[in-house]
Image (cartoon, rainbow, N blue to C red; front, side):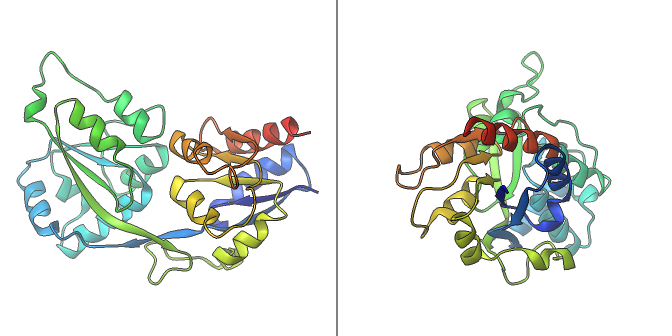
Length: 273
């Protein structure tokens, strides 16, 4: 029997498990979120909100659903909706899930890159070289406190003024007052110690972010199991790990879609036979 450790909450794993069972019947999946988001209030929030209301940002980017939820909570504290606070700014979402979270709040999303990552967002950014003076464009980057500087650096290289707004932090599960309320289904989630114990018998690890991967590996003695990574940054983080812990095999899923994740797991297992 194949055992898999998936670094997501059980509530987010259902479609993936279903797809996996169709390809690899009998596979067991243990869910370990490792980290969960906790909302924070930026020190410069009042000034940033005032700038938004005055229409000083040409673009506002969101790189995760957590960022959308935390921003919406901050807007509510001011008696504003996210739509009202964003005003006439154009809105970019890093991927389809983030875009849907914005649309659920009534926000019109102007740009979603085909490659669902910060790297993809930079590479596919909708430049208007004929009409747009980049020095007059200010972009607000709504993100987590531990976000990669990739997006900020890329937009700055285009000549834009890119300002970051950290609205949530990632803390070890189970965190106090998480941004997203847990469900009854999530009671089956492994905490960090149990997740590390589960690594010893896991045939495959599915890692969903660089920070989750590094947190899981800290304090773990031994080499990580063959690993499927989501996103270029997670793949790079896996490959750059010390040899004592680096997975012997690393494969990147083409997209975060459940079917693509399941296919990547199956391919990795077949290549290990």
